[in-house]
Image: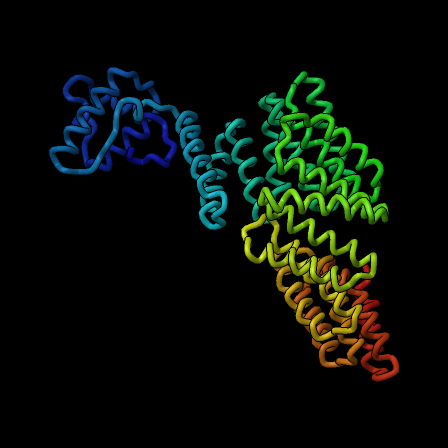
Length: 445
């Protein structure tokens, strides 16, 4: 390990620092072969350090450190390395470290902070682009989608400056994926379409990226209920895949198609495709898709008013997820599954069971930081308490939301809960009803 290896210094400054560390005078590192004045000029940056002089200095320093048993490990290459090269080497080291710790929150943050300190002084654009791309991947895995989006934007800015069009396209696709999770569906479509334009303009043949663009656009169109448009894209995607398609990609496409038919209220076709997925996953062990298929199949049974089968299907989905808690975005799907269970139990008047499932749903939702999801869970809990005439439960929900939801934009999403509670109390406690109504009106933005 080199002395001062994580400090970026000019060659002359390195000579001065190491000499000071060894406690040597300027003339003592000359080996009697160069003048003290030359060393002074080098240390002050007035003269460029050349290889022959560097070797004399390094040999003298290493010999002295060996005699005095002072730890030192330097060579000519290290002494002569300029500042931009040192910065690049350090960034390469930090990149390797970031990749190694991409799933370790604390270690990753420490490494990212070190890299950003270098980038603040040294605008090495290819390394900057790579570092922020890795950061985008890290935050996406941590389900911090806003942070992921911001870092991908920083990466995109640098990749554009490198004229690396393939990486530019890849980052546009990652931004589109983030936009879908942030529910900015039209933005996602625009980002994906722009990526397609760059692919075509740059004459880049990359079918894997093209398939990702199609798939993400299909998701976005489905999310805005343009199911026919989504199905048309999925059909195009299937035609583009050929023999290169993986089992997971095939299942993803089938799942998206089934979800579209569910949205179109064509429950028979949706059920048929979900069962096809379950038949495939039974043999292949693609458990994450199996869990989603069971969860969505529950919606089909609920539409048939077959509540018992709907509950069984949800419980099967939850069982798979609890046994495999390392699934990506597991808390999001678990919270939705428990919310659906709570709704089903409320529907058949099993309010005590509904409450238990909804409380678990709320615990999982807190890990996701999805305020809309949390609001929906609170609303269903309130329905359960109102059905049971449980004023203690109602008051607890109202108090909890007031205490824990301090952000005005977030509490605004909960306003319907206060309105509903105010309506409940109107014939029971007029003063409490009035206070809740007043609070509700004050938070409307």
